[in-house]
Image (cartoon, rainbow, N blue to C red):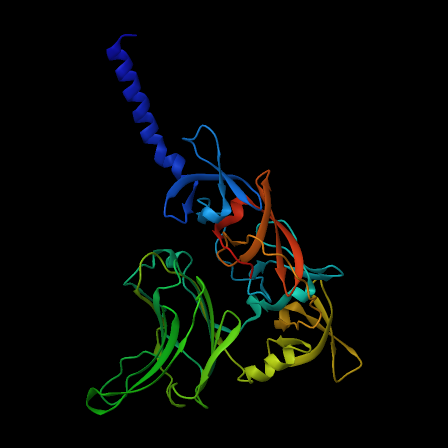
Length: 428
């Protein structure tokens, strides 16, 4: 082969590599270092101290200390958001979606969408929310729409009538935790004989604010608002807003904790206004993912009183609004057995009639653990978020340990089920 033939062969080889490089890259994930570098490839092993990473263009895998890493995005898509089953919330704020649940002597046995059973200690579980049994008035957005939600854009639901007593839940994932995001309710444009009103809840930097706008004469607005600091804002916001428009009472929960309550806003009793709900990304860079936005009919019972009860007894809420306080005795094969405080007899309920179960922390152990390197694991169903110490990755499975209310548990999941890994320095 002469020099000219060799050069042509080399050019053809380089062209082939260039042609297939995008295809190879699409099958791999993206690793982001804290100093800002991005690499295409896949994780081949993880220990408690380091990670091994390889790519099609690497001769050998490289080992990187965990404290040098920021995030890993898996390129493989497996499953999207589910509308049925139940959400399991832990006392440390982690969330896991499961198709089924069973109470065993070891704890709650779950069946995640990625297949391998998970057993969570009972004392580490805060609540169970049965998705298919909720009185849902609106459920959105369409799967995947949040992935296209970039700076300066807004997402709006279809027009919906917000009831006099309602519960609004939304899960929003951000890139930096600094983005400016607005959630708007009651927004409407009526004729000249009626007022324009809206409630705007805003997350901006390290504070949260809320304003109620009500139009008066001559296009002037009367505004009532509040603002509170929210330091160390997490990347993922799990927002629950309870509203009683008759009493003009609102309560805002962020990631399971009561953040603020106020007494103004809401439409008049005789106003059945159909208007869209809107989420607007007005400040920041990157992508904001609106994972879910759900509107529920609410029974209007006081949340604070419910929380005080939850701290002492197990609580169940049925889909018809009835509540019972006592002790959960049995949960298996679609049947729940419950002992109410005011009765010596056991009560039996079918899971299809259960809306929520709340559990106390009275059985939690006081366990002191040494600081460990934790990784925030988010799975392909977009809902799961678990803080884990990753022990190892082998045979395409990740093995890790979590802790909630001082109780440890073990977990394993397929690598293909992972959507992203966020490397952190502290344990939740």
